[in-house]
Length: 126
Image (tube, rainbow, N blue to C red; front, side):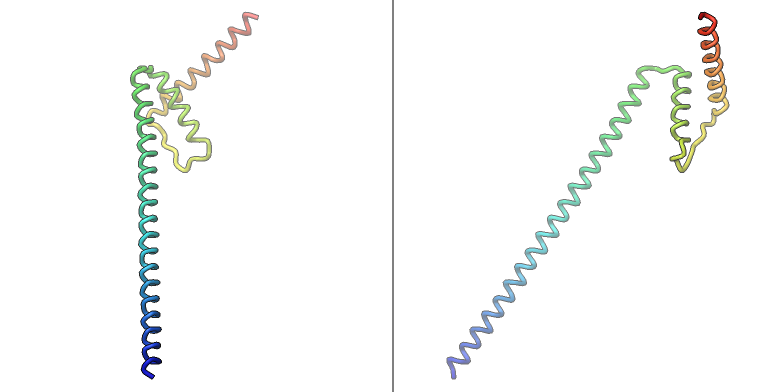
């Protein structure tokens, strides 16, 4: 009888050790998954930060190039009109109207008049 009870004790100890090992393996697995998720999140955030920096650097380079070329007021006004046209294409949810809209409207009228007179001159030369 003693051997039988010893046998059951050994089986119980084996089962206990098995449960402990399975729990430790699950714990280690969860820790590794959490660490992998953490590293992936960090890498993704670093990638987004680099993308933002690249866009900001490109914007700064563009502004620097514009400043170095010293464009005239007419060029700046014309580019403002082009940007305004893009903003007003119906896809924008908000449109910001420049405070100098009358000056821009005047420039537009001037451009139209110059185009008409150039066209008229070209027709009269024929």
